Amino acid sequence: MVHLASVPSDKTLEDSNDKRLKNIKFPEPDEDEVTASVYGSRFAAQELPKNEMPEHEMPKEVAYRLIKDDLSLDGNPVLNLASFVTTYMEEEVEKLMAEALPKNFIDYEEYPQTADIQNRCVSMIARMFNAPTHIHAKEGEKDKNGDEIKDGGEAMGTSTVGSSEAIVLGTLAMKRVWKNKVLEEERKKLEKQGKKGEKVEIPHNRKPNIVMSSAVQVCWEKAARYLDVEERYVNCDKERYVIDPQKAVDLVDENTIGICAIVGTTYTGEYEDVKAINDLLVKNNIDCPIHVDAASGGFVAPFVVPELEWDFRLEKVISINVSGHKYGLVYPGVGWIVWRTSKFLPQELVFNINYLGADQASFTLNFSKGASQVIGQYYQLIRLGKHGYRSIMANLTRTADYLAACLKQLGFIIMSKGQGQGLPLVAFRLDPKSNHHYDEFAIAHQLRERGWIVPAYTMAPEAQDLKLLRVVVREDFSRSRCDTLVADMKMACETLQAMDSKEKVEEHKE
Image (cartoon, rainbow, N blue to C red; front, side, top):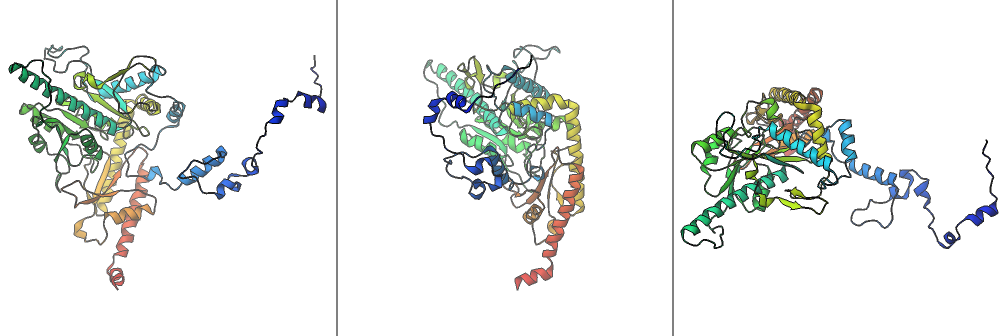
């Protein structure tokens, strides 16, 4: 049967309209809101709101285009060779991360699978760092080889928004362990004096301190000052850019909460000798833990130099942080921290809540955060696997060595380690014997004209007279792009050299 439709008359339509709507006055749409192009609209002729929220809305297409135009003045992330932060991920993982944008990671009851994905990541990363896996073993028990177990309980870990948060949490845990130890000592003293039951307090002359290299990233200074911990620095010099193990151990006293050792320094990418620090502490029977800041090197060293002992294979290493958004190959920001066993994470620092619908433990500085980066990390771990990470890190190391060789040919002095003995980066400086009138900062400025962001900076305290440049080799820095950078570097030096010729200098003086 064919369905026939009748055409209603004007009178029928008028009667069918809701009469209540006639009493409501609707503003007429602005003509350019519905007909004009973005640049033909009135919004294109106005300044973008900067200080106060506008009274009226604007079309989504206009808002998108105007903000996109504003952001076009930013540098190109791919050409930003100053940053360790990941600038490339596959489309599939980008889609997964975009789909997870509405998820609040902290809501474990609502998103239990996402919470479980974090747990999987923690387990994988902890095992990559050789965390003890004596499940349910107690300290003092014997392992399968008959040796006494020194690390009772399971390894613990959590995700963070980056290594800065992870370092604050690690410092906080070390300080609380030290505090509990001092309180226990004071309690025993009171018992010996027959004052059992009296309130136990930290003596006024006991102030916690932490030992670290002067080449630490600024987040360590923040952590120490925010948590009221004295900073004790082992200064770099013009010959040594990392911590001196013996000097570090010499600074340890009864109030030292721990030693920070860096696997991949910000300045030159060098790995500090964690094993030497550990061995000195063991040899001298010093009860002092080590926290390893592996923000940059935590995803590099296990695949490039797996024989290097810097992680939980060393008995004094009690916690490690790593940035997932650096060589973990995830967009910012995600970080991780792992504790050797639960005894190094005092329970009084862990908060138990139930107001999101279920009992859950929390040890973070912030509460709400997105789930996308954690999901992105899990994707990379299972997508690449150990072989994939090993292949990428090997390629980055080869590219860094190639770049170092090219820069050396151009007359630069290479300050970073090659052959996988440090991060895949190249730190370099001008040869002072060449008597250039320009410096590293002039080269960095010249490279900006070609779009490259290559940082020029001074060395750590006590070696700050040294100026250097640094190129971070990331996943998307291919050999071809490296050749382009070398060509532009050569051109920049030639341009500056021409400007510094004797005739030009004399002309400028006149």
